[in-house]
Length: 164
Image 1 (cartoon, one colour):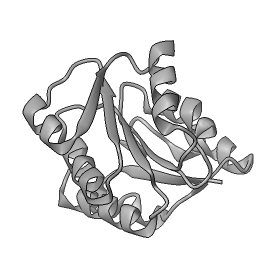
Image 2: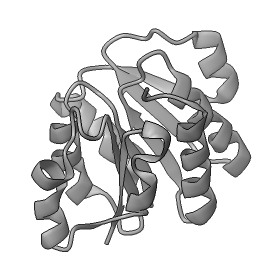
Image 3: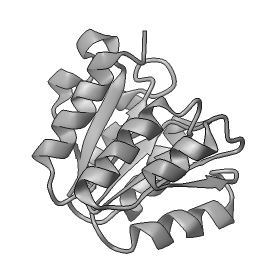
């Protein structure tokens, strides 16, 4: 089980504990469940929320009502990198890596995020491994694990890091 009510609880806890988050950027919209939760946080905080994926399988009417910007593109493209960095704009962001290659997304974008950002990767233990995908960045002082005791609560499989 990956998506359950507890994942949304952890998202809430991270947002409540990190008032510096000025935008949310999700790579990998999927069916849009996490996107919807982020959209609600965007409304609550008055911050922009952007999600990108190759295909939009979410209801555009719901995304529109939530004020979520959907970008249909390949997250590995130069266009996507520019779009992501433009939307971050030098402000602390929650970057949620849940696209086609969480490892590549994390390694590519974590170093580019502003200090105070939250960078997370879903499918911990399956498509993302701390020892392989994040340990080097931790040792280099780029990121530090954030609340690792939450990562596998109720099997949510969400690695969370804070940008130093």
